[in-house]
Length: 211
Length: 221
Image 1 (cartoon, one colour):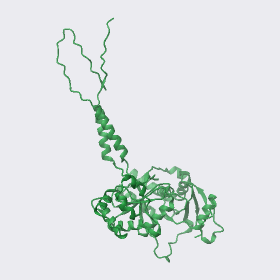
Image 2 (tube, chains in turn cyan, orange):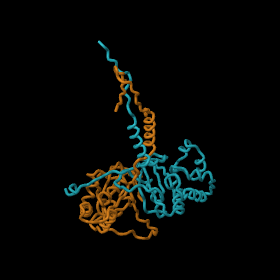
Image 3 (cartoon, chains in turn brown, blue):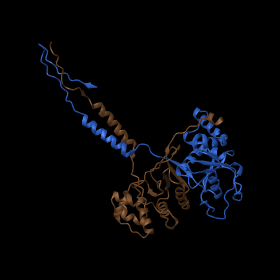
Image 4 (cartoon, chains in turn blue, red):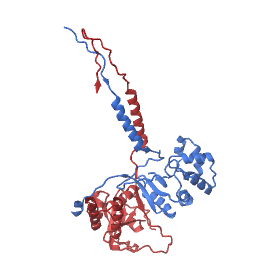
Protein backbone atom coordinates (compact mmCIF):
# COMPACT_ATOMS: atom_id res chain seq x y z
CA UNK A 1 0.00 0.00 0.00
CA UNK A 2 1.44 3.26 -0.97
CA UNK A 3 1.40 5.71 1.80
CA UNK A 4 0.02 9.15 1.15
CA UNK A 5 2.37 11.57 2.64
CA UNK A 6 0.59 14.56 4.10
CA UNK A 7 2.42 17.81 4.27
CA UNK A 8 3.40 18.44 7.85
CA UNK A 9 3.04 22.16 7.53
CA UNK A 10 0.35 23.56 9.78
CA UNK A 11 -2.33 25.61 8.09
CA UNK A 12 -1.47 29.20 8.09
CA UNK A 13 -4.04 31.78 9.13
CA UNK A 14 -3.98 35.04 7.34
CA UNK A 15 -4.02 37.67 10.04
CA UNK A 16 -4.43 40.68 7.80
CA UNK A 17 -8.23 41.07 8.14
CA UNK A 18 -7.89 40.72 11.88
CA UNK A 19 -5.32 43.48 11.96
CA UNK A 20 -7.68 45.63 9.93
CA UNK A 21 -10.53 45.07 12.36
CA UNK A 22 -8.39 45.86 15.33
CA UNK A 23 -7.08 48.99 13.71
CA UNK A 24 -10.63 50.15 13.10
CA UNK A 25 -11.63 49.46 16.70
CA UNK A 26 -8.54 51.18 17.98
CA UNK A 27 -9.14 54.30 15.94
CA UNK A 28 -12.77 54.32 16.99
CA UNK A 29 -11.79 54.13 20.65
CA UNK A 30 -9.22 56.85 20.25
CA UNK A 31 -11.68 59.21 18.68
CA UNK A 32 -14.75 58.63 20.81
CA UNK A 33 -13.29 58.38 24.25
CA UNK A 34 -11.52 60.71 26.52
CA UNK A 35 -8.98 59.94 29.14
CA UNK A 36 -10.42 59.25 32.52
CA UNK A 37 -8.64 61.37 35.03
CA UNK A 38 -7.92 59.50 38.23
CA UNK A 39 -10.20 60.38 41.08
CA UNK A 40 -9.17 60.51 44.70
CA UNK A 41 -12.31 58.74 45.82
CA UNK A 42 -14.41 56.11 44.18
CA UNK A 43 -17.76 57.59 43.39
CA UNK A 44 -20.80 55.58 42.49
CA UNK A 45 -23.09 57.98 40.74
CA UNK A 46 -26.85 57.84 41.02
CA UNK A 47 -29.01 57.34 37.96
CA UNK A 48 -31.29 59.78 36.22
CA UNK A 49 -33.00 60.23 32.89
CA UNK A 50 -31.12 63.42 32.10
CA UNK A 51 -29.22 63.41 28.82
CA UNK A 52 -27.30 66.65 29.04
CA UNK A 53 -23.59 65.93 28.78
CA UNK A 54 -21.22 67.19 31.42
CA UNK A 55 -19.67 70.56 30.49
CA UNK A 56 -16.00 70.53 29.50
CA UNK A 57 -15.01 73.95 30.68
CA UNK A 58 -16.27 76.75 32.88
CA UNK A 59 -17.07 74.30 35.58
CA UNK A 60 -16.09 73.73 39.15
CA UNK A 61 -16.67 70.26 40.43
CA UNK A 62 -17.44 69.26 43.96
CA UNK A 63 -16.74 65.65 44.57
CA UNK A 64 -18.33 64.24 47.68
CA UNK A 65 -17.22 60.76 48.59
CA UNK A 66 -19.38 58.39 50.57
CA UNK A 67 -17.42 59.00 53.75
CA UNK A 68 -18.33 62.66 53.60
CA UNK A 69 -15.06 64.13 52.31
CA UNK A 70 -15.35 67.04 49.94
CA UNK A 71 -12.99 67.50 47.01
CA UNK A 72 -12.80 70.44 44.72
CA UNK A 73 -11.69 70.78 41.12
CA UNK A 74 -11.76 73.52 38.53
CA UNK A 75 -12.18 72.86 34.84
CA UNK A 76 -11.77 69.14 35.46
CA UNK A 77 -8.13 68.51 35.19
CA UNK A 78 -5.32 70.07 33.21
CA UNK A 79 -5.74 73.73 32.65
CA UNK A 80 -7.41 75.32 29.72
CA UNK A 81 -5.66 78.04 27.77
CA UNK A 82 -7.05 80.71 30.01
CA UNK A 83 -4.94 79.61 33.01
CA UNK A 84 -7.69 79.89 35.57
CA UNK A 85 -6.31 77.25 37.89
CA UNK A 86 -3.08 79.11 38.49
CA UNK A 87 -4.84 82.39 39.23
CA UNK A 88 -7.31 80.78 41.57
CA UNK A 89 -4.57 79.09 43.55
CA UNK A 90 -2.64 82.35 43.79
CA UNK A 91 -5.70 84.15 45.13
CA UNK A 92 -6.59 81.47 47.62
CA UNK A 93 -2.97 81.36 48.75
CA UNK A 94 -3.00 85.10 49.31
CA UNK A 95 -6.14 84.83 51.42
CA UNK A 96 -4.38 82.36 53.71
CA UNK A 97 -0.98 84.09 53.58
CA UNK A 98 0.63 81.27 51.69
CA UNK A 99 2.99 82.11 48.86
CA UNK A 100 3.02 79.46 46.17
CA UNK A 101 6.13 79.47 44.04
CA UNK A 102 6.31 79.03 40.30
CA UNK A 103 6.90 75.31 40.48
CA UNK A 104 3.96 74.67 42.74
CA UNK A 105 1.67 76.75 40.59
CA UNK A 106 2.67 74.76 37.54
CA UNK A 107 2.17 71.52 39.41
CA UNK A 108 -1.28 72.59 40.46
CA UNK A 109 -2.09 73.69 36.95
CA UNK A 110 -1.28 70.24 35.63
CA UNK A 111 -2.82 68.30 38.48
CA UNK A 112 -5.57 66.22 36.89
CA UNK A 113 -7.68 65.20 39.88
CA UNK A 114 -9.84 67.00 42.37
CA UNK A 115 -7.99 68.05 45.47
CA UNK A 116 -9.31 67.49 48.92
CA UNK A 117 -7.18 68.89 51.68
CA UNK A 118 -6.77 72.06 53.70
CA UNK A 119 -4.93 74.73 51.75
CA UNK A 120 -2.26 74.87 54.45
CA UNK A 121 -1.11 71.39 53.44
CA UNK A 122 -1.31 72.04 49.74
CA UNK A 123 2.36 73.03 49.42
CA UNK A 124 3.54 69.74 50.88
CA UNK A 125 0.93 67.88 48.90
CA UNK A 126 2.12 69.20 45.57
CA UNK A 127 5.70 68.24 46.35
CA UNK A 128 4.82 64.78 47.58
CA UNK A 129 4.82 61.63 45.52
CA UNK A 130 1.61 60.09 44.35
CA UNK A 131 1.61 57.40 47.02
CA UNK A 132 1.93 59.90 49.83
CA UNK A 133 -0.69 62.14 48.33
CA UNK A 134 -3.38 59.56 48.90
CA UNK A 135 -2.96 59.72 52.67
CA UNK A 136 -2.87 63.49 52.77
CA UNK A 137 -6.31 64.01 51.34
CA UNK A 138 -8.60 64.56 54.25
CA UNK A 139 -11.26 66.57 52.50
CA UNK A 140 -11.61 70.32 52.25
CA UNK A 141 -12.77 71.80 55.56
CA UNK A 142 -16.37 72.93 55.26
CA UNK A 143 -17.32 73.70 58.84
CA UNK A 144 -18.14 77.25 59.74
CA UNK A 145 -14.96 77.75 61.78
CA UNK A 146 -12.73 77.25 58.77
CA UNK A 147 -14.81 77.23 55.65
CA UNK A 148 -12.17 76.81 52.98
CA UNK A 149 -14.63 75.50 50.44
CA UNK A 150 -16.36 78.87 50.50
CA UNK A 151 -12.98 80.49 49.78
CA UNK A 152 -12.36 78.27 46.79
CA UNK A 153 -15.82 79.05 45.46
CA UNK A 154 -15.37 82.75 46.04
CA UNK A 155 -12.08 82.97 44.16
CA UNK A 156 -13.09 80.53 41.45
CA UNK A 157 -16.03 82.77 40.72
CA UNK A 158 -13.97 85.91 40.95
CA UNK A 159 -11.38 84.67 38.49
CA UNK A 160 -13.89 83.10 36.13
CA UNK A 161 -17.38 84.60 36.51
CA UNK A 162 -18.88 82.10 34.08
CA UNK A 163 -18.05 79.11 36.19
CA UNK A 164 -20.88 76.66 36.84
CA UNK A 165 -21.14 74.37 39.80
CA UNK A 166 -21.15 70.65 39.19
CA UNK A 167 -21.76 68.29 42.03
CA UNK A 168 -20.61 64.74 41.85
CA UNK A 169 -21.47 62.69 44.86
CA UNK A 170 -21.68 59.05 45.72
CA UNK A 171 -25.23 57.79 45.94
CA UNK A 172 -24.53 56.51 49.45
CA UNK A 173 -23.32 59.85 50.74
CA UNK A 174 -25.43 61.05 53.60
CA UNK A 175 -27.58 63.85 52.36
CA UNK A 176 -26.74 66.40 55.10
CA UNK A 177 -23.16 66.60 53.75
CA UNK A 178 -24.39 67.38 50.26
CA UNK A 179 -26.91 69.78 51.71
CA UNK A 180 -24.11 71.58 53.48
CA UNK A 181 -22.16 71.94 50.24
CA UNK A 182 -25.31 73.23 48.55
CA UNK A 183 -25.79 75.64 51.41
CA UNK A 184 -22.25 77.00 51.09
CA UNK A 185 -22.77 77.45 47.37
CA UNK A 186 -26.02 79.26 47.95
CA UNK A 187 -24.37 81.60 50.38
CA UNK A 188 -22.08 82.54 47.53
CA UNK A 189 -25.12 83.12 45.33
CA UNK A 190 -24.78 80.01 43.24
CA UNK A 191 -28.27 78.73 42.62
CA UNK A 192 -27.83 76.58 39.54
CA UNK A 193 -26.26 73.22 39.97
CA UNK A 194 -25.41 70.37 37.72
CA UNK A 195 -25.71 67.02 39.41
CA UNK A 196 -23.60 64.36 37.75
CA UNK A 197 -25.55 61.20 37.11
CA UNK A 198 -25.42 58.11 34.98
CA UNK A 199 -28.00 57.68 32.30
CA UNK A 200 -30.92 55.37 32.88
CA UNK A 201 -33.75 55.14 30.41
CA UNK A 202 -37.27 55.27 31.77
CA UNK A 203 -40.36 55.17 29.69
CA UNK A 204 -43.87 55.61 30.95
CA UNK A 205 -46.77 54.77 28.74
CA UNK A 206 -50.06 56.48 29.03
CA UNK A 207 -52.09 53.33 29.68
CA UNK A 208 -50.29 52.88 32.92
CA UNK A 209 -51.49 56.22 34.19
CA UNK A 210 -55.03 55.75 33.11
CA UNK A 211 -55.72 52.72 35.22
CA UNK B 1 -9.55 31.67 6.30
CA UNK B 2 -6.86 29.20 6.43
CA UNK B 3 -4.54 29.31 3.63
CA UNK B 4 -3.08 25.94 3.07
CA UNK B 5 0.07 25.95 1.16
CA UNK B 6 0.33 22.66 -0.45
CA UNK B 7 3.64 21.28 -1.15
CA UNK B 8 3.54 20.91 -4.84
CA UNK B 9 4.92 17.79 -6.16
CA UNK B 10 6.48 17.96 -9.44
CA UNK B 11 4.31 15.85 -11.72
CA UNK B 12 5.95 13.48 -14.05
CA UNK B 13 6.88 15.08 -17.25
CA UNK B 14 5.47 18.42 -16.12
CA UNK B 15 7.18 21.58 -17.02
CA UNK B 16 9.22 22.99 -14.31
CA UNK B 17 7.70 26.35 -13.45
CA UNK B 18 9.16 28.98 -11.28
CA UNK B 19 6.85 29.17 -8.29
CA UNK B 20 5.24 32.53 -7.86
CA UNK B 21 5.57 33.24 -4.21
CA UNK B 22 4.06 36.27 -2.63
CA UNK B 23 6.18 37.47 0.21
CA UNK B 24 4.21 36.56 3.26
CA UNK B 25 4.29 38.72 6.29
CA UNK B 26 3.48 37.29 9.65
CA UNK B 27 0.84 39.52 11.17
CA UNK B 28 0.54 37.76 14.52
CA UNK B 29 2.78 40.11 16.52
CA UNK B 30 0.90 43.04 15.09
CA UNK B 31 -2.39 41.53 16.22
CA UNK B 32 -0.92 41.06 19.65
CA UNK B 33 0.14 44.65 19.76
CA UNK B 34 -3.25 45.88 18.62
CA UNK B 35 -4.98 43.78 21.26
CA UNK B 36 -2.74 45.25 23.88
CA UNK B 37 -3.44 48.80 22.78
CA UNK B 38 -7.18 48.23 22.65
CA UNK B 39 -7.19 46.75 26.13
CA UNK B 40 -5.19 49.68 27.38
CA UNK B 41 -7.55 52.22 25.90
CA UNK B 42 -10.60 50.36 27.11
CA UNK B 43 -9.33 50.50 30.64
CA UNK B 44 -8.03 54.04 30.77
CA UNK B 45 -10.76 55.90 28.97
CA UNK B 46 -14.38 56.40 29.62
CA UNK B 47 -16.43 55.85 26.56
CA UNK B 48 -19.61 57.56 27.59
CA UNK B 49 -19.55 60.98 29.05
CA UNK B 50 -21.32 61.37 32.32
CA UNK B 51 -24.58 63.21 32.22
CA UNK B 52 -25.65 66.06 34.36
CA UNK B 53 -29.02 66.91 35.76
CA UNK B 54 -29.66 70.57 36.20
CA UNK B 55 -31.15 71.77 39.43
CA UNK B 56 -32.07 75.32 40.23
CA UNK B 57 -32.75 76.29 43.79
CA UNK B 58 -34.58 79.42 44.78
CA UNK B 59 -32.17 82.03 46.09
CA UNK B 60 -31.88 82.14 49.83
CA UNK B 61 -33.75 84.90 51.52
CA UNK B 62 -31.15 87.33 52.76
CA UNK B 63 -33.57 89.34 54.78
CA UNK B 64 -34.64 87.30 57.80
CA UNK B 65 -37.86 89.23 58.19
CA UNK B 66 -38.94 88.57 54.62
CA UNK B 67 -41.86 86.21 54.34
CA UNK B 68 -41.41 83.20 52.10
CA UNK B 69 -43.93 83.05 49.29
CA UNK B 70 -47.27 81.66 50.33
CA UNK B 71 -48.62 78.58 48.64
CA UNK B 72 -52.00 76.91 48.74
CA UNK B 73 -51.95 74.15 51.31
CA UNK B 74 -54.48 72.02 49.47
CA UNK B 75 -52.23 71.65 46.46
CA UNK B 76 -49.09 70.81 48.32
CA UNK B 77 -47.69 67.37 48.54
CA UNK B 78 -44.96 66.89 51.10
CA UNK B 79 -42.42 64.24 50.30
CA UNK B 80 -40.17 63.31 53.17
CA UNK B 81 -37.12 61.31 52.23
CA UNK B 82 -36.74 58.84 55.02
CA UNK B 83 -34.03 56.41 56.07
CA UNK B 84 -33.54 53.01 54.40
CA UNK B 85 -34.67 54.18 50.95
CA UNK B 86 -38.17 54.91 52.12
CA UNK B 87 -40.37 57.88 51.31
CA UNK B 88 -43.06 59.19 53.60
CA UNK B 89 -45.57 61.57 52.19
CA UNK B 90 -48.55 63.55 53.31
CA UNK B 91 -50.75 66.08 51.60
CA UNK B 92 -51.57 69.53 52.78
CA UNK B 93 -49.81 71.64 55.33
CA UNK B 94 -49.02 71.16 58.98
CA UNK B 95 -48.18 73.92 61.36
CA UNK B 96 -45.85 73.60 64.29
CA UNK B 97 -48.69 74.14 66.77
CA UNK B 98 -50.26 70.86 65.77
CA UNK B 99 -47.40 68.78 67.01
CA UNK B 100 -49.65 66.76 69.27
CA UNK B 101 -51.93 65.89 66.46
CA UNK B 102 -49.73 65.28 63.48
CA UNK B 103 -51.36 63.87 60.36
CA UNK B 104 -50.31 60.34 59.47
CA UNK B 105 -47.69 59.90 56.78
CA UNK B 106 -47.93 57.23 54.13
CA UNK B 107 -44.81 55.18 53.51
CA UNK B 108 -43.84 54.36 49.96
CA UNK B 109 -40.64 53.72 48.03
CA UNK B 110 -38.73 54.78 44.92
CA UNK B 111 -40.12 52.07 42.67
CA UNK B 112 -42.38 52.83 39.69
CA UNK B 113 -45.33 51.47 41.67
CA UNK B 114 -44.49 53.66 44.61
CA UNK B 115 -43.79 57.33 44.33
CA UNK B 116 -44.10 57.47 40.57
CA UNK B 117 -47.66 56.14 40.57
CA UNK B 118 -48.58 58.69 43.20
CA UNK B 119 -47.05 61.60 41.34
CA UNK B 120 -48.54 60.56 38.03
CA UNK B 121 -51.96 60.29 39.57
CA UNK B 122 -51.73 63.74 41.06
CA UNK B 123 -50.18 65.24 37.99
CA UNK B 124 -52.26 63.45 35.40
CA UNK B 125 -53.68 66.48 33.63
CA UNK B 126 -50.31 68.10 33.00
CA UNK B 127 -48.60 64.83 32.18
CA UNK B 128 -51.20 64.04 29.53
CA UNK B 129 -50.88 67.50 28.09
CA UNK B 130 -47.12 67.14 27.77
CA UNK B 131 -47.42 63.62 26.44
CA UNK B 132 -50.03 64.64 23.84
CA UNK B 133 -47.86 67.49 22.78
CA UNK B 134 -44.81 65.29 22.34
CA UNK B 135 -46.87 62.74 20.46
CA UNK B 136 -48.15 65.38 18.08
CA UNK B 137 -44.66 66.62 17.45
CA UNK B 138 -43.56 63.07 16.73
CA UNK B 139 -46.43 62.52 14.31
CA UNK B 140 -45.74 65.80 12.61
CA UNK B 141 -49.07 67.41 13.49
CA UNK B 142 -47.30 70.28 15.15
CA UNK B 143 -44.43 71.71 13.21
CA UNK B 144 -41.86 72.92 15.63
CA UNK B 145 -38.08 72.89 15.50
CA UNK B 146 -36.59 70.10 17.55
CA UNK B 147 -34.67 72.40 19.84
CA UNK B 148 -37.68 74.39 20.91
CA UNK B 149 -39.64 71.34 22.04
CA UNK B 150 -38.02 71.56 25.43
CA UNK B 151 -38.92 75.20 25.88
CA UNK B 152 -42.47 74.53 24.72
CA UNK B 153 -42.75 71.79 27.35
CA UNK B 154 -41.46 74.08 30.04
CA UNK B 155 -43.99 76.67 28.90
CA UNK B 156 -46.71 74.08 29.42
CA UNK B 157 -45.32 73.48 32.88
CA UNK B 158 -45.30 77.16 33.80
CA UNK B 159 -48.87 77.57 32.67
CA UNK B 160 -50.01 74.63 34.69
CA UNK B 161 -52.22 75.39 37.65
CA UNK B 162 -53.69 72.03 38.54
CA UNK B 163 -50.75 69.84 39.36
CA UNK B 164 -49.35 69.36 42.82
CA UNK B 165 -46.80 71.61 44.45
CA UNK B 166 -44.26 69.17 45.72
CA UNK B 167 -42.14 70.02 48.71
CA UNK B 168 -39.16 67.75 49.06
CA UNK B 169 -37.65 67.45 52.48
CA UNK B 170 -34.83 65.17 53.41
CA UNK B 171 -34.55 63.50 56.77
CA UNK B 172 -31.00 63.42 58.12
CA UNK B 173 -30.61 59.71 57.39
CA UNK B 174 -31.52 60.04 53.71
CA UNK B 175 -28.70 59.68 51.23
CA UNK B 176 -27.76 61.56 48.11
CA UNK B 177 -28.98 58.79 45.83
CA UNK B 178 -32.48 59.22 47.27
CA UNK B 179 -32.30 62.92 46.59
CA UNK B 180 -31.30 62.48 42.97
CA UNK B 181 -33.93 59.77 42.56
CA UNK B 182 -36.70 62.03 43.74
CA UNK B 183 -35.58 64.92 41.50
CA UNK B 184 -35.49 62.42 38.68
CA UNK B 185 -39.05 61.33 39.44
CA UNK B 186 -40.09 64.97 39.20
CA UNK B 187 -38.63 65.10 35.71
CA UNK B 188 -40.12 61.79 34.68
CA UNK B 189 -43.58 62.69 35.88
CA UNK B 190 -43.39 66.22 34.53
CA UNK B 191 -44.13 67.85 37.86
CA UNK B 192 -44.15 71.57 37.21
CA UNK B 193 -43.62 72.91 40.68
CA UNK B 194 -41.35 71.40 43.21
CA UNK B 195 -38.82 72.68 45.61
CA UNK B 196 -36.34 71.41 48.11
CA UNK B 197 -36.82 72.53 51.66
CA UNK B 198 -35.20 72.01 54.98
CA UNK B 199 -37.11 69.55 57.04
CA UNK B 200 -39.05 70.92 59.98
CA UNK B 201 -38.66 69.38 63.41
CA UNK B 202 -42.25 68.17 63.52
CA UNK B 203 -41.70 66.42 60.22
CA UNK B 204 -38.71 64.71 61.76
CA UNK B 205 -41.08 63.50 64.43
CA UNK B 206 -43.56 62.30 61.85
CA UNK B 207 -40.92 60.22 60.13
CA UNK B 208 -39.54 58.86 63.34
CA UNK B 209 -43.01 57.85 64.44
CA UNK B 210 -43.81 56.20 61.13
CA UNK B 211 -40.47 54.44 60.84
CA UNK B 212 -40.43 53.42 64.45
CA UNK B 213 -37.23 55.26 65.25
CA UNK B 214 -36.93 56.31 68.84
CA UNK B 215 -34.08 58.73 68.72
CA UNK B 216 -33.10 60.48 71.90
CA UNK B 217 -31.67 63.29 69.83
CA UNK B 218 -35.01 64.19 68.30
CA UNK B 219 -34.16 67.72 67.40
CA UNK B 220 -36.46 70.38 68.66
CA UNK B 221 -35.14 73.34 66.81
